[in-house]
Length: 430
Image (tube, rainbow, N blue to C red; front, side, top):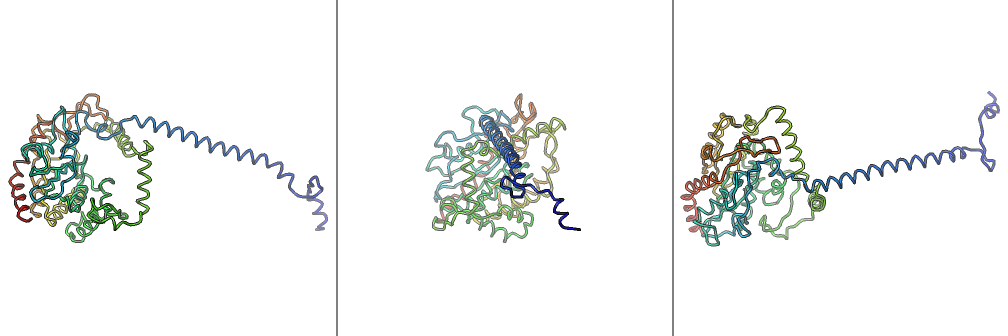
């Protein structure tokens, strides 16, 4: 085909200077593109501004919202006790080692320090035990230094971490670690982040690594401990690990992230209370679920078998470690409410009682069965208008001050002969 014909068929647009091209069309489209960019920018700005306003509003609302799981999900009739005053030794750090004193670290779940129907002056079993052993409130010359080391919803992996952390603090290492075990503590394996972070310190990490290597017979506990130890190590001061600050390393990305999170925790309420927010949302979900399915505090909750056996091995690993370190381990099976219906399967209770005593015998540890120690008249129920739907239902986790005193008296009766013996041996070793 003749190329001149094709050229004539092609439209040519000339600009004001008479030059051909597409510039005029581009100029016509430029206002449309500019308008489109402005529209997109407005959309992005609108989303950002609305998001910021919603976050600011949520932050203000959340600041005044009670999301503490200890006060939202728990019984309002329970008081989580603290120090009697600013000088209460039970809630202070373990004292420096002394040949004429025996240090006792008491580790339990909330049952060990939460009192039902609290009245001013009521004492938890931990504080009562200190007073009974010493004949009065502990002072600087008292023979027995009892210290509070309990956590709500304590897990067996956390008992191991707390034990190794305490023993690693050489100047203040305890002579006795006293642990209360509840069946609910056998339902979960993983330690919570604020406790698990102690495994990142060099001294604790090294001890756990050695313990894992020397415990092939505890095949279920080993991977659980390895999971605890995952992540980079943290450097701490000598008062926590016994290591000199001269060994400090350049901060890791983990440490930098931790500092950033700490600053956000302090400045942004929504961020600082994120774990409480999660617990609060879970409590709302559980309330709806329980109402729909007819679940109550007395509904049977069998123990998951694999989790149960792993936790048994974590208990045994803890006792094994304490024995190796010449720290006296004393574990007791915590009281269970003696009434039916009951959330604990009788077969689970019987099996744990047997397994518990057997593993203690293998590790030559003192283990006490207090599961039937507290009678029914020392327990009570959830208050009216309980926010998670448990109004009037039995509380199977906590009991009254009379029960606290009963447990403390029984512990003192059972342990005092051993404590006096261990103190005498300590004096002779110095």
